[in-house]
Length: 316
Image (cartoon, helix red, strand yellow):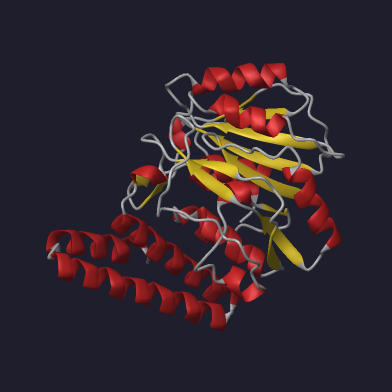
């Protein structure tokens, strides 16, 4: 799927391109997704703009039509740092629905197509980078290790006030991944820690999932391995009431993951990769069985029928 095809299918109104003076050939493109992040976006952008590098980078800031003041702050930063920030003001009419859920997929995919760098990093507008050498360390590693397609590091979870919290919703991945492990990402790094080569071709199936990160990891597994870098200070992954994934319960999270695996199996079937196709089909069946057993044990039969209706409807 190229940019023109993507726009033809999903673009209803052009985003507003904010004026900038960003270098035309940056080495790294940083995708920042901002939506209802008025209390957090400043800290996020400050953590990015204080990065110390010996190369030029750009910030692709996608503001997804917030109504809480986030857009005004994004404009303020774009005007203050025109040499770093390329701001795209998106419109709600373009938002893509997945399983009848409004997503930020248009924002991230559109911004992905805007990147000019050799490498890409991602940071949601409510998360924070704390190591000023993060980008430099990740850049140095991938420059020296061409058999790796991605590297990542530690993070910790914080609440709305920035205080450390313990949670079973996410945990850092602290070891390397082979190509096969990355291609079939049953376990994977957190998005705010990743740094990867900008040579991916996004397939049409990626627009149909909520777990875009799983799809990206699998695509990266087709071209290289994953490296955990231990000497980068913890980034901060924020859990708060307005966060998209903070509001998703365990059952719904499994349903979304099953759907993602089904779309990945379709992608690999279309590519003629029978091995990957079989693995994703097998994993989706395994999750289906686990979910079915959970519903029976809890006697949640109405939820069970609703969940499996959505799985069958949207995985075709």
